[in-house]
Amino acid sequence: MTDFTTVQLEMDPRGFATLWLNRPEKNNAFNAEMIRELVLAIDQVQSDKNLRFLLLRGRGKHFCAGADLAWMQQSAKLDFDANLTDARELAEMMYSLYHLKLPTLAVVQGAAFGGAVGLIACCDMAIGAQDAQLSLSEVRIGLAPAVISPFVAKAIGERAARRYSMTGERFSGERARDLGLLSETYAAEALDDNLCGWIDTLLLNSPQAMRASKDLMREASSGSLNPALRRYTENSIARIRVSPEGQEGLNAFLEKRKPNWIQEPQQ
Image (cartoon, rainbow, N blue to C red; front, side, top):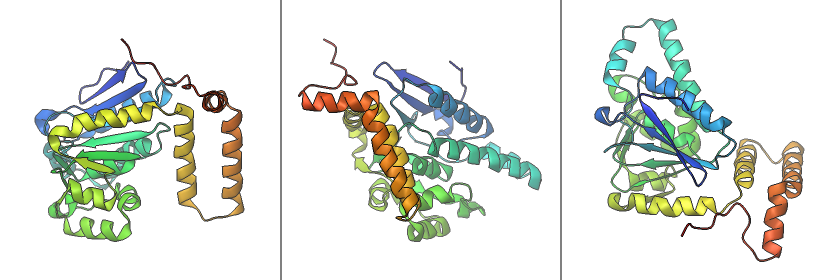
């Protein structure tokens, strides 16, 4: 397993991984090193066939305070081509997370500013603290949320994305839930306990079926109701019905037993 400096990848024996942003002394603000390490960690998760889903979390008080100040100071001195290289690396991180085949769940506490909102939007689901503070803060320092904008617009809709990208105003975890960026919110002190319920729920499901559902929803939401999409959905259900996990799930349901992907709790 790769050793990282700015992130941490933890494997749970139940079959999922937690990818931690691990710069709590910097409020998990990301720099070039963290961006590169996130890409490597996501690739590592992608290649592990035994994993069922991924949690994305931040160590310490805050999920992620956006871009690191020292990194921004360095970027300000770069020419256009060097800045374009930086932007491409950031985009690679976001697109890798968005296209990860595993289901992804972000867990948000404290601050989530700038690019951190992009990370949340790239995940399939997200939960957070009611008192979390989020902001597309780039306009406050003369920038724009360029690379993350497609993911944010998909997550909260064009109208809300226009508002928050142009005002830079902060909004709470509860507002983020209303916008659809967060699936649910909880009191900060109850966030971890409620996360356990989400984990238990995801562990009930067929790993293959969750991946197939992720692919299906991406295809269904990206196009119109046309013959190609119809054929895609028909082929998808036919493939999964005859697959080993599909057969196991159907037989377990008919035989009134638990499927073999549900692990019995240890005594």
